[in-house]
Image 1: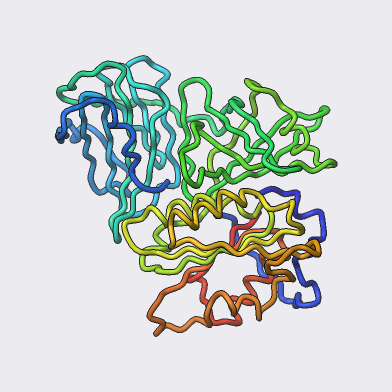
Image 2: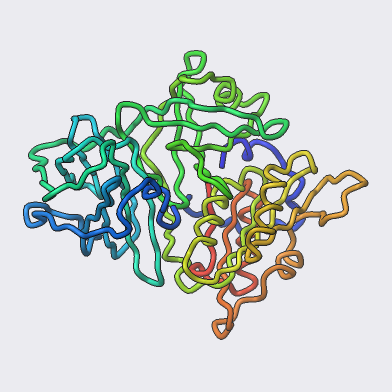
Length: 398
C-alpha cells in the first residue's frame, strides 16, 4: 500500500455516496515450510532439550522447543498472542541472537547454518506458534543446545538496510522488487504489517510505506518482496523503481496492528482491494488457503482499466488450483470489450458479495478492506450499515 493513492481522485469511488461521517483508524506467514527438510535425511526427527532455565522469555511465549534433522534445525515458540516484534542476527559467527518482544534470546550454533532462516507463524485452531527454520551447512546432529546470556546487549537499531536483488515490471506501471537484509540480520514482518522505506532524494528526506507480499503459488526467494506502483510525479516511487541491483534502501521495523487470530473461527474471508491496496491481501490469501481448515477466500479487485489489473493470470491459476479461492475484477473505466463487472463501490454491490451480518449466521464472515482513503472509509461505512461490528472486519490504512 503506497501513499500515491491519497493524492488522486479515483473513479472507482462513488463520491456521491460519501457521507459526512469520516471514519479514522490505525493501519495495519502461513504454514510450516516443509522445503527445509527435502535434502536427504532420516525419516524421523527428534526433539531436544536445552537449558531454558537460564533464559527469560517474553510473556507471549508459553513454551519453547527445538527440533532437528541432520540437515536442519527448527526453533519453536508456542504463543498466547501473535508476534509483533522479531529481529534475528547472526553477526557473530556461531551465535544466533533473537530480539523477541523487547527481550534478547541467544544460542550457540554448533555448526554453520544458511542465512537467512525461514520464519513462519502457524495457527492450528486456536494454537499459535512461531517457527524459525535453518538449513545446516554440514549434515550432522547437534547435542545439547547452549544458551547465551545477553548481558547489557542494547536493542537492535530501529532502521535496517535492504539491498535490491531483483526488480521486474509486471504491467505498465507496477514493479515487483525483491530485497534482502544486509549484515546478517533479519526482521520478521508479521502478517498484515508494513514497513516504511526512506531515502534522501535531491537533498530531501522522503519516506513511503509498503506492505510486503508473498507469491501466490511458489515462494519468492527474497527476505522482503514489494509490489510498487510507479507514479510519474511520485518523488519516491519513481526513484525507487529506477534503482539497480545491489542498490540499498533504508527500512523501518515492521509497523501494524493486524492479528491472524481475527480469523480463528472464520469460514469466509472476503477481501475488497482497490489498486495497490491489493498488497496486504496477497499474504492474507496465501495464509488463509494454507490453514489446516476449510476457509473460502473471495477477492474483489477494483481497478480503473483492464491494463491496470496485476497478476490476473496468477489469480486465475489459483482459482483452478484451489477451488476455495475466487476473484472478481471490477473496473470503473472499462473498454467496450470488457465483459466483467464494472462500476463504483456501492452498498448494493457489497451486499451482492457479503450478507448482512447476524450473530446467528452459520457461516462466519470476515472482511478486509484496503485502497485509497475514500474507498476504505466508504467500505467501512457500508459494513457498519450491514451490522458488521469492529471484530468482523479490518481496514488497512496508511
